[in-house]
Image 1: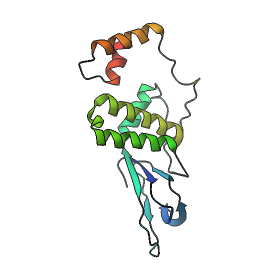
Image 2: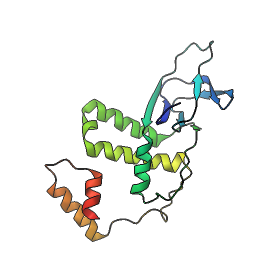
Image 3: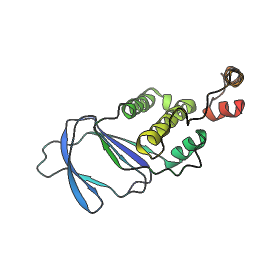
Image 4: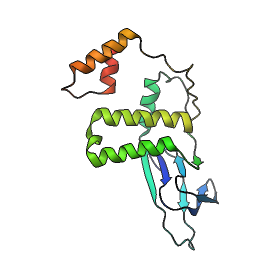
Length: 176
């Protein structure tokens, strides 16, 4: 059981495996790019059959549930009861691209930049809510964009803080 939400993406060759959901094992074939999402605090088990000659090559992304709660707050959806569901998918190109951005951020040192990591965690949180939760974020339900005046406040704040450490939450406070 994971304390975080976990995505597992097959980045290797296709392989067959068994996963335990509930009381029994089920057979599944995972092609390259297949994704499994396991919500936090949910028992889950995957195993390769003994006769399987190849090893699995998976990319794992763990996300603290607090990031999802923070994303709900940013989207002003705190009144929603959100349930995240175990899912298997053939492909998730958005998750794949976010994972690559995280990997490149680590490789090139951008991951320590607070603005970079906040932006990626927010993108991951929104994607998680849209695709793996029971919240449907339609454009008509999403909070409206910034007015021209607030956008100018945000722009001015960013210009004033270029030599300081910028955060998304700092910009939001400046335009509030």
